[in-house]
Image 1: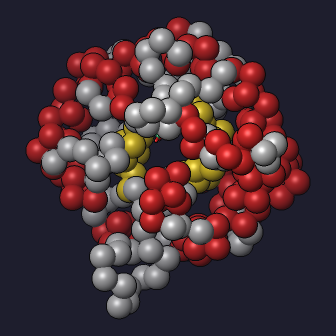
Image 2: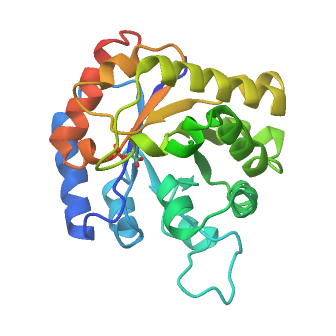
Length: 257
Ligand code: PGA
């Protein structure tokens, strides 16, 4: 049975000490039996501390970005080799804030996806249209393009280590508005369809997570959708209590989890 996936991107929040406190406290709030695959994506500086704190845990540790090269003259960048060396399992690629604030392109993501596969990192690729693209009727076209380019060189046998997060840009962060469930269902179907045309039947098995202003009030309705394989949460999950609260409410509608 595939697990329900649930994780948080801390963005540029939390020192190593704060991350360690978060991880230590989280255990107290989680149900004893959990058939959910958790993941945490703290800032780079918290990764070594987080790796130690998670050493005995099944929670995946993720990083928020990386360069595609193993090493080189790329000031300010971090390589997949370096991430593996500090115990990172998962790389998040293509977050809307990287695309929007730092000019990350689909072509660069394609190289990063290949590098992640070469180094055995699990991949969480984020896709999502912005408000202009949606208003112009180009939401589906945008995510199809993002998937087709970023995953163009992905080896078929690497698919079991890949997840997609649908995160519409207009729903993310302060000022974002939560997407309605019909939109989420439609876009997840569209993503699944694109993955099927790219990879054939195995493409259908790639987990698709929803993210964007997920909170304790709306998480259960997203989790109830058969199209949603997990949730990817920002602000609402930045305290251990908040993380566990959103998770527990989401699971209420998924008794099999
Ligand atoms: P949010 O962030 O839950 O705070 O909207 C989601 C994200 O950016 O991944």
